[in-house]
Structures are given as structure tokens and as C-alpha cells.
Image 1 (cartoon, rainbow, N blue to C red):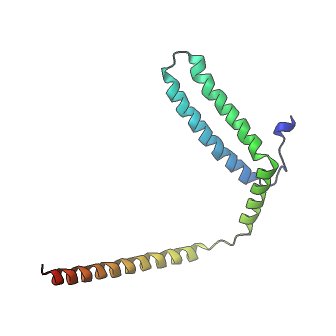
Image 2: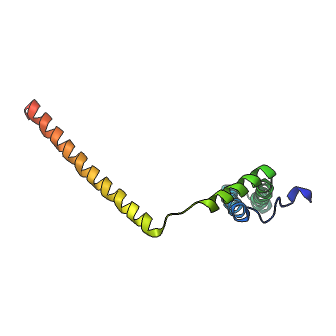
Image 3: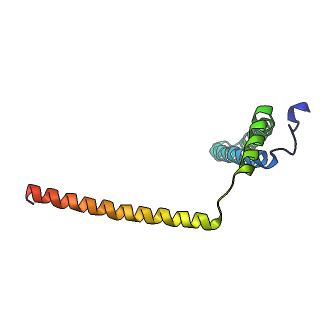
Length: 128
């Protein structure tokens, strides 16, 4: 069926795969919540087939959307850009994190000192 043909197979494979799986997981979670809400219905067929049918429909819709030319081209180009990124090494990340923690600690001490100074000054001015 041409409706469910894979557009540019092999390109942007992992981006489309994981995006589709996450979207399907969200849809399946919603169908599960619907199944829990339909627990008050006594008809077992309605209680189970409605969420299952919606889940299958959502899966087909997600597959179709992941293979639309506009969405697929976007994901292919996004994956290509991610491959071009120069990622920092583990050592650079550790050093940067340590610097951020030290700067935050120094700023906290400075703000505490400024707060105590202003508190003492205003307490002296109002005579408490």
C-alpha cells in the first residue's frame, strides 16, 4: 500500500525510530488510561476493543506521520546535524561542572554576607 511506504529508507533511521517509539509509548499510555477509565463498562468487548483499536490507529498514524516527506526530511537533516556536533570530553564536562559548582557556592556566600550586612545595617538604623 503506497500510504504506508517508507520514505527514504535508511536515512534518519534512528531518529525516526526513536521518535516513533516515544510517540507510540505516549499514545499507548493514553490508551491504557482510557482502558482504566472504561472499567465501569460491563461489556468486555467495548472495554478492551476501543482502547486497543485506538492504540492500533495511533500506531498507524504515527508510522504515516514519520514517513511524510516533510517530517522525514526534517528528521534526516536533524540527525545529520547531530552527527556534526563536536561533543565535549568527559574530563572537560567534569571540570566545567566543578567550576559551576564553585561559582555558585562563592555567589551564595557573597549573597549571604550582603544579606547579613544589610540586615545588620537596617536593624541598627531602626534601633532594634
